[in-house]
Length: 113
Image 1 (tube, rainbow, N blue to C red):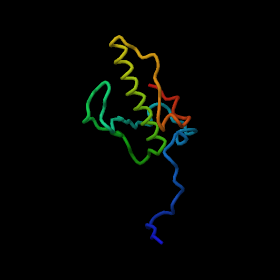
Image 2: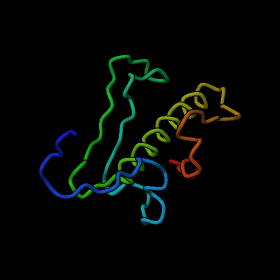
Image 3: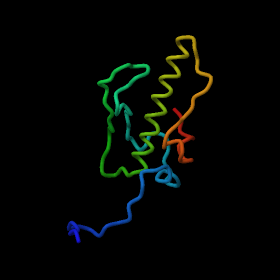
Image 4: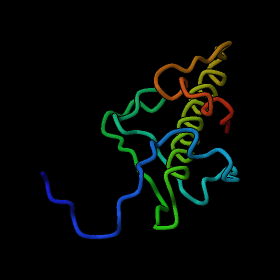
């Protein structure tokens, strides 16, 4: 049997998921937390493979819901940047599709920038 680390009793772990935002009164801005979602570089419209993601403004008062909320806002802002770039180039997108694990959770769709 593995030894448990000393410290406060363990609490059940909650997943970092949309339900972490629900019912907590989180409004746009994620309580000052900003996420730049370039964790694998950026492809469109910046084309910078060296771009790196960041969570800015994180402190001990932020929780999982704040981090998730900031990530969704960052992704929404990056998507808006892409749409605006295409629009300015004269080819506005007629549809934007979200795929992957984020959209599978019903709480991710209402986020807009």
